Amino acid sequence: MAAAVSFQGNPAEGHARIDHKFAHDYLSYDAGVTLQPCVKASCYFRQKKDVSFEHFDKHWGSVHADLTVASEPFAQYNVLRYVQHHTSPEEKARLAKIGQNVLDFDGCSTLWFRNWDDYEKFFTSPNFAELVADGDLFMDTSSITVYAGHDMIAFGKAHPDIDASDGITKPNTVRS
Image (cartoon, rainbow, N blue to C red; front, side, top):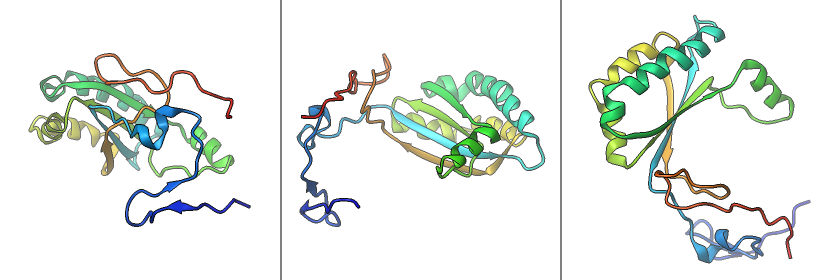
């Protein structure tokens, strides 16, 4: 049974502290949350119902990736990083087997931008329509769901020329 938590303040009205001894000062309440300057957009989507997983996976990882990186908006609006997160039906089953709730998506493309203006211009560019047209060949474009914001690196090194600061780089496994 979980121990009762005592809040200092009302969490419904703003941040309310709990009594917690931090192992890392970097993550303490008083240190503040260090958000990275770039905007990171993760676009989740499903494969088209009338295509095989093999077609979905190969087309997205080759043709669509090439078209995206070669597109005019990609260079014009300073995309800093483009990553595809591939997961197979077998990997999704493996996650479910250990009791994890699996997102109802088949892929996720993540793009990093220097700022919100570049992000908005990229996705509203007239040339972006060419990428959507290619997406129609392998993905259900009506399923695209976006989560965008700023990273807070809790652990790990910052990406050079993208992030402003590192997170914790060596875990403190001994709590005093």
